[in-house]
Image 1 (cartoon, one colour):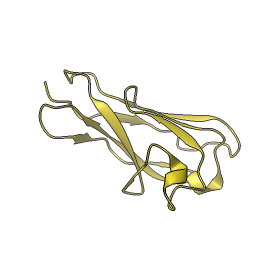
Image 2 (image 1 turned 90 degrees about the vertical axis):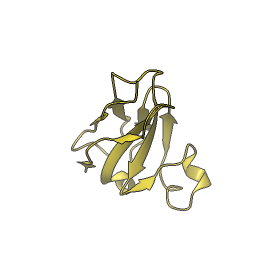
Image 3 (image 1 turned 180 degrees about the vertical axis):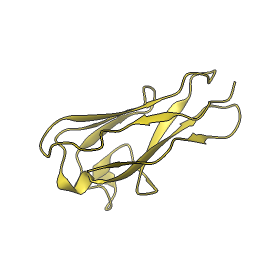
Image 4 (image 1 turned 180 degrees about the horizontal axis):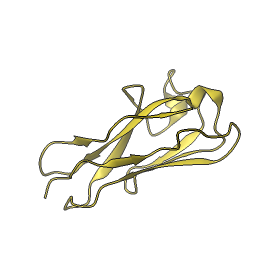
Length: 101
């Protein structure tokens, strides 16, 4: 079963220096989908230090659960986020974009 449109659970505002969790959820895909996160339209790499765009950010990504954890959150992390659910059936599905301040 291809994934349905996932839902991005993104706090609209968060505190700099805190641990902040963004979640992507999707219930219909079988096999269970894997998740990718995008910030301002750019895919977020597994390791932020591997990318000049994200090297000022400190986060961990779990493709299986869809969790994106910022620890600590920085001012750099303000932006528009969306997630994408993919399995091997049908096209990837994108969530709506949510802005986090």
